[in-house]
Image 1 (spheres, rainbow over the protein chains, first blue to last red):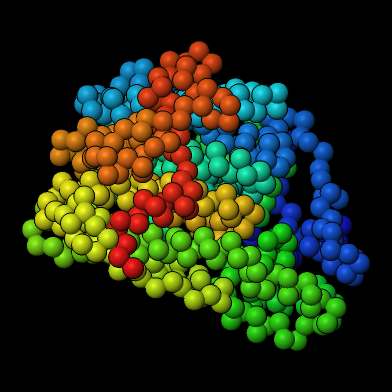
Image 2: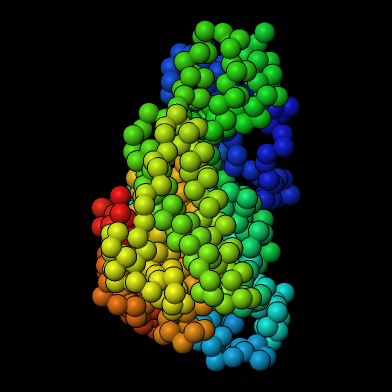
Length: 237
Length: 279
């Protein structure tokens, strides 16, 4: 490997640790420099040389489209677990309209979770350990603010992986789900503050929603998913 | 000068040069950043073809077709809300007016963004059509003659346009498979349209309509004139996987259909909006 630390700084998010050692799956510059070192001998990108041994610890999402689908399955596991708990004992003062809507969302998230589980079949990650103890489920504010974070995060996570997907059918499935997540996000935001469905925190000056990379999303989800997630072979831009 | 020194210099001008070079579809990424190409004039010939590939304009005609189609949809939505906001006493003051203004402003931004994107690709954006929001193709006597005088009619058509827009963008995403930043941008608009759809549906619900923020089955409480915008939404099997009662969970067919929004082809969307376009 060429020395490249000076060029490689700044863009990486350290997400996971293996024996206390930061781990990152971002290798684009490395990949380019390997190409450049060949002196234009061919146009094939040499990416395989950067492949690392899968981590021994944690749940390995996989590579390519499988990795992305497992990553989305991970997100749906978190959302479904959250709404399952929300709807087991609603927060104080929940209206009948709110309970009906939150029951609907729970069912949607379970449907998404189980869809990914069945679609992935043998290559699906297992059920993850999820810790929601930081959330006060008796508090409307705590529940809805958490829901807002998860829904907006879900939208930006799906938006962030669309361009990484290779299989057309997988891209279509992701598209079918992300707009439902956006419908949820808008509703939850409006329950918190009517009219905030597409506020400037989520829609930018070009009228565009957000997109986040898996590394950025995993920083947030790691506060709730206690299973160590090995995302090192997820595709990157 | 070594290659690495050269790249370090380019990076000062174009911080994303490495990403650009590594992208399989670098040709369609960062399409609007053409001014940065001036930095490349001093490059050695040996690297020329590589950079050309990374910075060249898109040659994929499908990308332009998708963007022109999207622009037409955004023209329609932007003008629809602009005319509504200009119609006296149509939209109640307060939350309703604020929400419609927010949506109109974002549709305007989508128009500008898509025009800028097309121009960045060296393409000429299509012109704004002439619209007839009664759905009468210029007669003013279509299925919605009271669209700008009756608030319920206006919101009904707004819901139809937003739900149709979500399905339209979703249908185009597959056409942009692998198109990098263009695909990401289309997805970012797609989810904003879904946010709009959710809110308009909430506004209608608050006014007494039996609708939720999501689409149940192919239900449509507006009328036969818009049913084609909802046909297909009743799918409860995804990729051969039945979603109703999946894996023993009590997921009703209604919830199963709500959980997945369905795409529409460009042809079907154009047929849906045809009554609203005069020329």
